[in-house]
Image 1 (tube, one colour):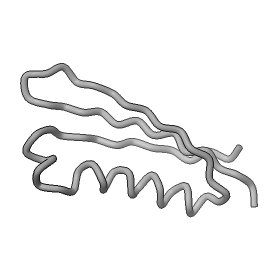
Image 2 (cartoon, one colour; image 1 turned 180 degrees about the horizontal axis):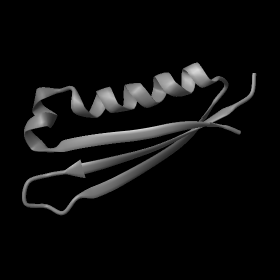
Image 3 (cartoon, one colour; image 1 turned 90 degrees about the vertical axis):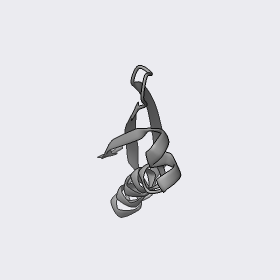
Image 4 (spheres, helix red, strand yellow; image 1 turned 120 degrees about the vertical axis):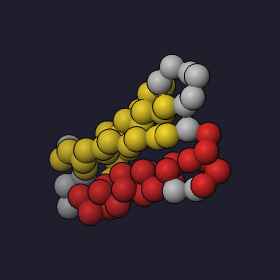
Length: 66
């Protein structure tokens, strides 16, 4: 299998604060595992009610063959 690199960008929007951006990169052994990780990253930061009250997070990601 050819390795894939995950590039993820999360934009955080919080009341009365400027937007912030956080980036991640990681290497995976297959495209399905890379896609699963990107999807899980988005679910982790926007799924809990406590986090939804404090800020809005938007996660964009892409998996690219190395």
